[in-house]
Length: 467
Image (cartoon, rainbow, N blue to C red; front, side, top):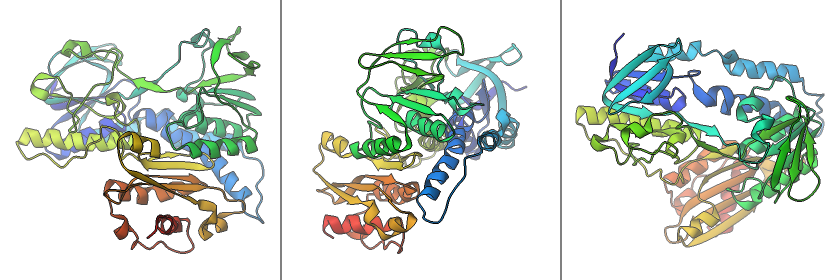
């Protein structure tokens, strides 16, 4: 087996796969090293299984809002079977065949840097192999869940996103530590699938990095569904005397919470453990800083790149894939001596769209009002009640939602857009185009939305602005 390639990628998730694909398209040879399953976190323990679990809960909510329709109890066994199908029953044979068909070599094992352009691989069978890159090594190992240093928490063996998305049974009582995307989505999924008592414990509020009204509307939805949310709450101790037994979560204030399972969703850190960063002079416990071509800064000769969560720019699968496409094209162009492809500044992730697949859905792109003001923009904020749009009314009774546009008053372009409401995820790409392409508002006004659709909110936002 050849041990020298133009490009070696460590990490076989969506970002790593896209680097390999683009590099090979550019005429280079490539190897992809993955310790677990080809397809990575997103395919098996995050985006794909979580949405498979959320879809029936979301659909049940839609049906409940339409007069004349009713829905019986959700068939949980069928939902879990569908989830298993969505993740390929945790078998990556198809993904491996795709990599080999690129064509690239798939290497199963733990890869780590071992000096300049060297990757040491401990293979799945226990063997060892040293791969050499002629052009570049790309790090695409993603991130791992953070378990805070709360007394007793680690010993209680809590669920993270891995365990909750792969659950084979729905717990009767679930406690959720955290208020971000994973916490909110999985609290609603587990509750909708039968968790009798679901309690969300969060130090601040729900979805704290988004517009405040997003978390407020979601909290109202949680309360209506019977999900208890305790905000401004500090966990001081966790007890689980028997493995797999009852969990007791003690709080700084208020009564303790007892549950059958505890989900910890308090953030993620770059997966740099035993990656060999020290062998090339980089810190072992921090994100890998990169420039806009995804090339690691501070590395002589510029042969090291990092894409996806590990560079800390925008922890979203689709942004990791975008970075990977840029990276693969750049490596190929540099190898040929060609002019580099066009790139956008991804430093703050401000062009990154994000969807929270709860009911109501929450989606946003660009800057929030607070972030825009902090960055020094002269801002005007335009809000509109989504429920007042005819298309939203026709979606179901008691439709509730809100839209916000954050406008740069000097350039008359959108800095950010947020939608909250049932089914609003499909509105987001129009907002992404408007924000990233910096479409002037007076030109956007001529993009006529169809009637009667929820997208008519675009017209209402612009009319409220004064166009």
